Length: 457
Image 1 (cartoon, one colour):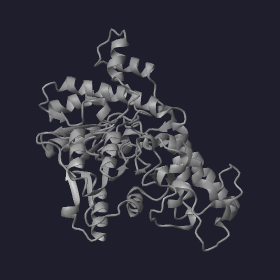
Image 2 (cartoon, helix red, strand yellow):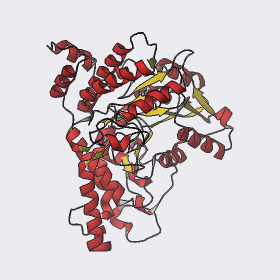
Image 3 (tube, rainbow, N blue to C red):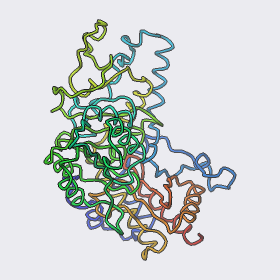
Image 4 (cartoon, rainbow, N blue to C red):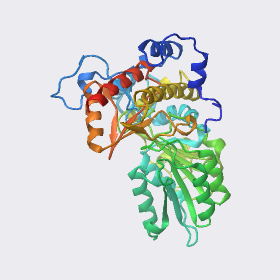
């Protein structure tokens, strides 16, 4: 993973900085922000009085910007998004159906999803023909598994990580049942070693080699939602293919977070949502990757009108002539508002690259980790269960507390101070410094508030 980032940029940056301030000082955080600026000005930041956990509790500086560390759940709104949506509403109001082909902003609705393919492909490391923007994450998993989960009596199992996001398990379970297999037998949920919180790559590869003759599909997260572990997708794909397994990934927490090279890694398929690190808005449209090597194959798939070639789509003929590549998986015309909301965020991504964002992300997360370890050096109050190795994590640190009750008190205290994070039962708070808009000053403030809360809880 992240083979372009050999050394930990955070440690390199520290060694290259001539700073008299201590690393756990506000001045140090400001120096890092000056040297490694974010694109924060491109986003709308929630106000503290709008994000407090309990509205009846007093808040400090209610009109100030909140510190938002929840991009792993819902990304912030790009400022340009409202403008783009309002433009489409105006076109609809003024032109009606003619907006499908005659559009004053050169975004005819009949081709609207074409405007988000190229940048999406760059973000996931794919060819444009390998990416489609459609449906939602779990829907796309089902559509992909119709093509790629083709079990036989001897080769029918699905290998996944234990404690994957429940929606993934529900999808796998229903697919297995649909094909007449018992999920207890057909789904392998790989557990971490005793006393550990994350999976070792060698254990994943070992399991593939041990049971590969029975495994039809290897389907992991790119980044695990609970622990923040970033899986070695390249090596997992290689191992799966060596055992003649199909390999796919749920990239909900990986897309826009870590460097992806889906085409080069030879991944068969991948699915993602766009409302987390891609900042397209709550519940917005999903994405699908189908490797180009499958474009001309005869694998089965569900078809719809929107997957037909555009040059003859409106002939209304009954002979389905699919467009080349992943877009053949499109069924119906997408919601224009949803697509332009994604377009707004992608226009911000165009101002940088995933490699640049990843380098800044490692700096941010490394700095936050150092602050947290400094305030709890003995790890008596909480434990960071996210891997320490920067190549094995994205921009998330999962903090595990001693009890669910203590975690909730800390969570509520952070919210009252205008620091937006999320909790995952039973005892974890997830903190995600997104490299597009979070700052080192945000990290410093989080650590200062957490330190105060730990002294009182």
